[in-house]
Image 1 (tube, rainbow, N blue to C red):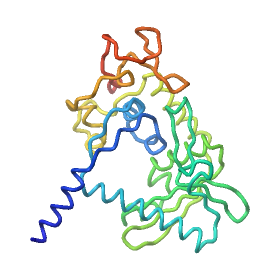
Image 2 (image 1 turned 135 degrees about the horizontal axis):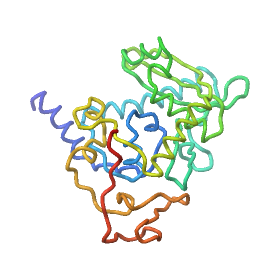
Image 3 (image 1 turned 90 degrees about the vertical axis):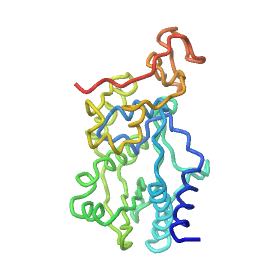
Image 4 (image 1 turned 45 degrees about the horizontal axis):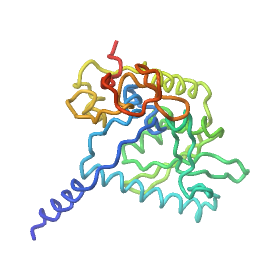
Length: 269
């Protein structure tokens, strides 16, 4: 076997993996994205563009390093960490609108004074890490800042322990982030626009650099086929109980009706 064949076989294995079902909610990890159209697409369960083998490996490495960080916090720093909810055995989760809005945390952590905080862990390459270390997360990674603000707001917690590990040299940098009521109000306004169908695209065409790396670019700018369903219909609106309401039939959306028209965010002004 040639060396290149090994790499090709690994990549082929990633390509052949079963695709994950697209999320059907607005999560904290996307709340700070520059384009609000992503919020509308995500809440309605529109499919993502599949990540390539290399990006999948980056994601997998991030999960591995997250476990390493939790272990270090517990065993080296002697902090109390709850990476899962003891009642469910899963991530600590906060929900609103019956599950249309969902936050999953990396865990909760207690500082030596007894304050319980959100725990957020990120692995970064050297350039990204250096930027964070120099400027702080609000400046270096505004999407991460929005993510933790949403988690604190929904979890009614006042601080986040934000831990970053440099993938190049395993250096740590940590920031304690305080809850920002102004930022949380802005986040809630973005959610309200998504719920009421008022989100807009960030660009007038797909050439915008922010669109090229977006997982929703296929449904937003391309001809990606979407299975008709009530959530993907422009005439359906999310209900506070987690279901969908058909505005054409004035009834709970259950089966596909002849009025179906695929949802689209508002165009850029």
